[in-house]
Length: 130
Image (cartoon, rainbow, N blue to C red):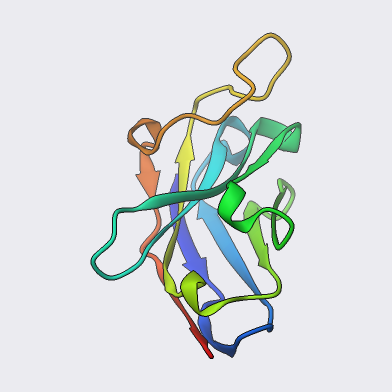
């Protein structure tokens, strides 16, 4: 699968953006999707993830209550809805795919670390002005 992230831009603090991660290729449903971000001079950090089939979702504590993740398997697209944006949310946001089965019954309840993701999109810049 190949991933294309989009939807980034410049927004004022308190505003909202919805990032999309469009997948091409086969078997989108067989991948769990994750969102990560990296700000200048900082390490890449986990933002959110949605499991196979959208059964489970996970959001980082730093954005909980403001961000949400979802997926539309019919559209081969995953989404990151970002509300109440803050200047510290400024970063390049990446989507990624893994075959890891976290979140399904009988499996891990938390998403895997970033090194388990096998395919990454090109990133989309989000800039939040104060």
